[in-house]
Length: 319
Length: 300
Image 1 (cartoon, rainbow over the protein chains, first blue to last red):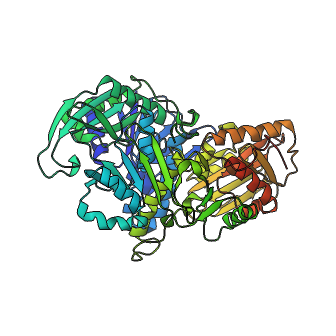
Image 2: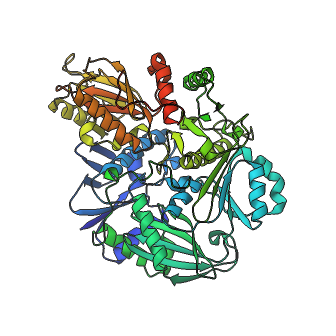
């Protein structure tokens, strides 16, 4: 019973996963993504769904009945290669993505299963379909629409429309004149939710949560003090998480919530490739224990991505 | 009204559809620059969504008043707003990513869209291939070992090997029948994707909703035969499940004359349907809610 960990040795989440596996006595193989992209070999038969990968001294045949699960974080590190090596690294990444997308094995998470986090407004719509409360939001490139939204919600925040890294910031009325620049790049405005942040990791059916209190809009960039406290999701919110898991096909998800003083939960997003290491260290490795249980087959398995019923062929209700 | 969105600079498909709609006085607008399409997508706390657009010359419209034909999602790119970084500079790339994500959200929420994006955005050819049962597509290999690939092919019954070099994007066809020694030295750069194919004579089916048009039939397959029609109908149904209502499928026939998918093309070149453009545009109008629905499985 072995877990295959695929990722970069420079990715702190991968480093933590390897250390946690060692600490918890989980048998694992580490497939070095950077070594593979630099000089690895591959062969894959898409019809038989079998093949072989090598990275450094490691050779892996897939599928392998001894490998019960594959944990993969395919960060695009190709940009860090010297220009002459980038094309070959991109080709290897493309092949590896094809293999992990189609291999008949548990892959956490299978590449490309749910990319909706890259279209944040659509993503909110999917989360709402699962029963979550979401922040009132406006995606627009129209200054007039933005002004109307901000008049109704003067304590708004704004951020990018895509998955590109942007920092959610409080809207300052002094920025009103800049709304005329919106046609150059659309922006997502949201009502600012008062309260504390809660981060929940769902691995299989196991959920582990932590509450973060701070003074800023975004606790990850908060200048002041932060307080981290283990917490537990209300049952109905946990049910919504499982509903999103079923809808998306993801088996390991990081949910971000705001919880109000009245205990109401509002979901901000669901991360399909959660960087869970910091939370896990504070939570006595409960996240990685749940993740390894999933990967070792001692927790409920995902459905296979390429045989799953399509989830969004029709427009959502209320569109 | 119909909004035609996302046309590459050299793509005549939208011009042709534009002309068709103009000749029939069907209300429409063409948008090649998303920066000139003011829009707003609101999501309420309970998930209710409202979309408003202001297509050029059409005032403000609610989402249910607009049907969208997305010609080419990769063309949904605004000009560089700053003019500083050039078309491939960081500002332009950021704005392009933001617009692509925004229009992905917008189109996912509208009731009538061809082609509709889903959780994987607008699927590309590789993604669509994976959605089809493996037994219905040509066997595919990915490898860094060209020699082993050739050995596998020689042991297989496939008459041809269709090789793509993943680095150079060059494609070539190796035929056993014409040159028994063919393929030696076909390792290329050592990053290969290859299809084991019975031939390179293609049938191309252009599918619009439930209707399909045979726009090429090189091997002379009986495209009216019931099993063939059933195959195309089932293929279209699978891809409709991925939001795809307008696409082309390149098929080859094996020795039993049974079709296998070589490639799904989600943005069919206009040259493939220029001769039947009016029929295709009529069916697209029906899919967009502007015209009668055509029958099912019709073949030209």
